[in-house]
Length: 281
Image (tube, rainbow, N blue to C red):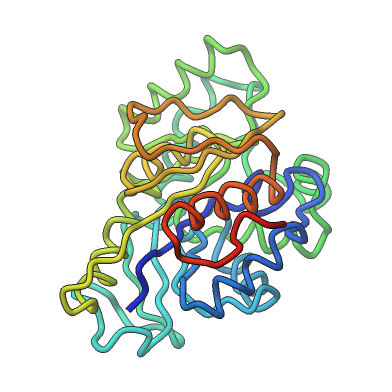
């Protein structure tokens, strides 16, 4: 059983914020796979976005979608199906949020009071999503295929944004600030989804309890960074560092994006004696 499970954000962490490249981390990702250290993607991205990326990375581990709204585990990845998980299209799926249409109705209910101050994916065409994200048109279509929540692009004042968030929360929504968007969904986050998934690893561990490392760069990663045994905060030029209560077992990269990911993970692996020569590269 692995001694460590890594849970990582994508945009601004494993992927470059602007180019979406993961090249600086590729060598280390291959080393981790060879040593049986799972890398779990925990992102605001959709299932449709994450599956091709996982294939590109050669990653066949579970993954967390839409800021913790659901966990997808390949069938038979664990010895038994986790309690509360449904089997769908080759995955065991654990949901933590109501479906997208529920949150779209709540956004629609408050939209008249915030006219002209925001737009959301459901009201955008692919060209608008491309413009806001820098994604290709094909990738933008995958980003728009939300299942559990809705990204909102806020263009109004900070005071208006706070009022907007309060109104949504009064209607039962949970709002997370990501690197580019407000993410409107249920009362879920990457931290809760990570803890649930990590408990499945521990159930399979036969007494050998794997440690957890969480990696992120923005506030929607905070719950995951707080909950893990170790936290790695990736330096960012585009978003404020997530505000954490913890200070112990917390690393900060000096580089941004996948370069910082490689730097920070190697530093931790070296300190834990998990990979030989892990400070190189």
